Image 1: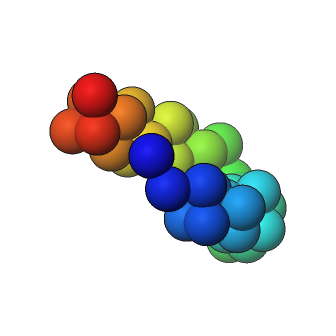
Image 2 (image 1 turned 180 degrees about the horizontal axis):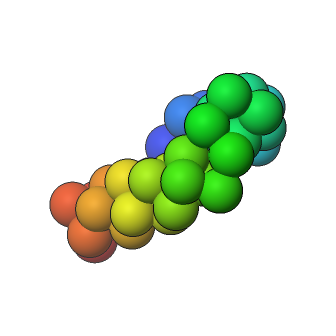
Image 3 (image 1 turned 60 degrees about the horizontal axis):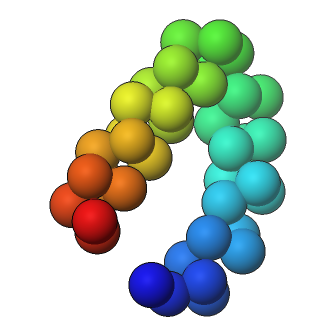
Length: 40
């Protein structure tokens, strides 16, 4: 598993939440869940 990808995640999440609000946060949760499913 690559940790380099996930180091910048909090910054990206904050940026999306700032732009989209909780709808964006929900999208991030769904998206990251899909990524975890493909990794494992």
